[in-house]
Image (cartoon, rainbow, N blue to C red):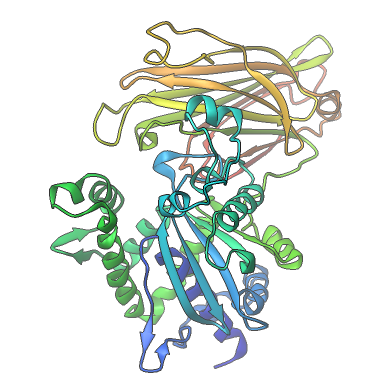
Length: 473
């Protein structure tokens, strides 16, 4: 087998290993112990060998997989049914060890186990929003991904992991984040998986797993410490199915992995500067982009709202209009809660931040409240947006609550920086709307009106945020 083909197979298997790590603690054993990465031939090389994308991806693999030295990675399972700025609530994690392409160790646990075992004197003050709306007195690993930039959230998660006493904390080379979407996409390729008489398919795998670890284990009389055994068993069965895949299906695995990176369901941070630069170039790093033109990013954080996010439809409407010699922007974020109260769904509570170009000036805000009606004794108090700076952006933030069956909107109006106005006047206006890590595909509408002084006067676009969107008017 050629070196390039071998590396392609390595790339595919690593993606699988990390994806399976989301749902299980497992080892792939062979007659010689831990099995090496796959060595099957496939038609994938023929399909992709001439693409720059493939060459760049392959160039990352030797060091990433420990061909220069053994590598250790912290893998975070990000439950995007409880969205957080860094992709989703960190429900569980794993530590993966790789040596020359071999998976030599895989240890996983629930995040609460790490936090409960933290030293008694481990006291970290949480961000103000986590204190006020998540009612945290101390900040722990499970809530570490407060930044929408994966690099920041990954480093924070690793810091908490290390100082809470996580195994090999000082030796970890990188942090990988994954959402349940990857598991759904894998099952589309492998077909249904049966465990303990339960059939898991693309339609039910996430909801059924969530039900079993949150409620089902109680009805079956299992102790809380054993509630994730089903997840482990499912992972083993899924692994067997993947190992038995026909060679021609590997191209589908590669394509799936690329789509998951693009859709921000899979992100990687490396402590190695050269590797991190390569990950950024490849589009796998999940960083908040620094752009020369206009920028918009809406970031929600589920604040003690159970697993309600799938029941809330979001839409974002961005408008620009002239206001004298300046350009005024208006962002409307709409939330439609179509769920009802049950074991996983409640009123939606989000601390929402809107990232816009640095030096933007807030004119007005509407829709943010002091707290929900339960915690405010039925009296809803409107409050203005908080204004700050993060990640090279101006940030407007605040709290919103949406009852089941209701809809709410946030509206922000602000002046764009003079630089953006000059770009529009010169016909060089660009807009980059960045997707929040872990979200699915919020609706996006863009209406741009530069006034009569600009040839292209106005434009209207309707799309979604399945991935980042770029516009040039």
